Length: 260
Image (cartoon, rainbow, N blue to C red; front, side, top):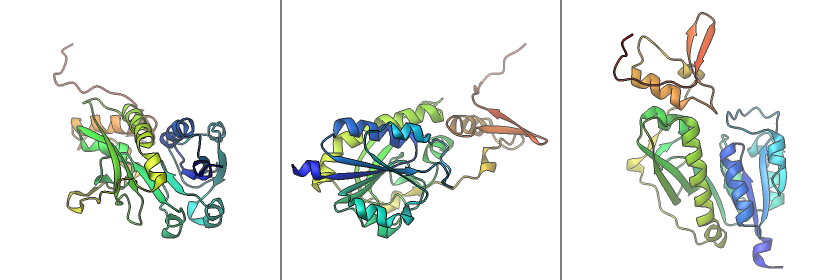
C-alpha cells in the first residue's frame, strides 16, 4: 500500500462552507483516507448555516457525530490523523486536540488575516463596509485565528453584497485553497508566514439584539448593511413593534427620494 493511501485526513466541519470544501477534496484527493467529524443534531452549538445530518451522510467518508470536540480526545487519538482540516467550526479547540495530528492542524477563516479575526466573519465583513475580503488557510494555534498563514484567496465585494453572495465567494475561494495546498500540507512542506500583529483586527462578538434596526439612531447606510449582512442563511435584521418583529430580508438604498 502506498504512503498516500495511508495518509489520514480528518475534516472538522458543521456548516455548508465546510461541506462544499470537503466534497471538493473527496473528489480531488481520493488517494487519502478521509474522516469527517461534525456536530450531532442534539449538540448545543448553534450553526445558522448548518446542514441536516442526511446531507453529511451523502459524503463518501467515515463519519462521526459529536457534541463538543474537546471531549473527543480519545476519538481523534484513535483515528490518529496526519492532518486535521477545520472548516466551519464555532467551538474553541484545546491545545491537547491541536497537538494530536502528526503533521498539521489547519483551519480556514473567511477574511484576509490578520484583519477580521474572530466571530461572525461574513456578517461582520459586510457590517464593516469593506470593499474586499477573502479566505485564509492557516495553521491553527491556541490564539484565535492567529496562526501562521499557508495561503490566501482575495476577492472584491460589491456595494450590494449580501450574506448569501459573499458566502458563495467564500466557498469558491475555499475550494481553490484546498486544491492548491493540501498536497504540500500532507507532505509537511507547506508555506508558513507569521501574521503581522500590528495589522491585526478582531471583530466584536455579536448579540441577537444587534439584529434589531434602530430607526431613530441607525444611519441609512448602517441599516442597509445590517439587512444585507444578516440575510439568509442568517436570522435577518428586523424592526420591532410591540412584541412582534418584522424581518427584512432585502432592501434597496435610494439616494434620491421618489416623488409620488
